[in-house]
Image (cartoon, rainbow, N blue to C red; front, side):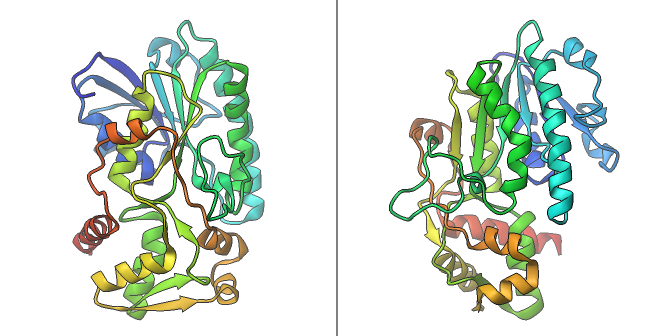
Length: 313
């Protein structure tokens, strides 16, 4: 809703893969007064035009939320870790930090809308005949088993009516970074073939990173509260179909990576994430339409992302 009423927008985790795209999207609209919570490793020069605070969810002074009261908070500050132990430890810290943040925000004179950016891994494996809708019971799998602990306080806050919390659950976000770069683009550059993991029959719900940011933005602008929104742009396709499309674009061949080899390459958690089948549908097609997706086919998504990656070389 470009040019609408002014609103104070806080973005937590606005320098990551999704967060950067969301900040780019939000900053186009002069009605958005952006405030970012950032960490010390950030490139500050890219954020000169925005209000920024350095710190973490655990340490931020509550007074800043009182001075710059948010109308909406986009929460993308999800704890990360390189192995099971560190993911669990950071998720525990994230749980405590989120409980603290909920107390701060719910105590404001006018509590904000909170859009918590989660992921489709929270649904776990989904049978092809019964795709995941927003009210499908959660069954966290792979990395989401650890992340769920950080997310749980927000689920409870929503259930108790403490805040208007809305969960964004993106599927496979395709852009010049994250999983696509690490598991598809870089292997292609090294070996000249596009990988396909497992048996290739797992279903993927795919969206371009820019369209993902647009849909997250519209979730925050939706006129009535809702519990969650599944974020994807095209009907589910198998990973084999995805790899074949990419290989055709790159004038390459595909290479099947069986599950036992995949586990040896990346470990069991990553192997699970790459081979889970999570076809998604939505109860909110009107919100999808309002987001005005600019890359509505797998071909358009891949063509643009490959272009962006080639420009970075």
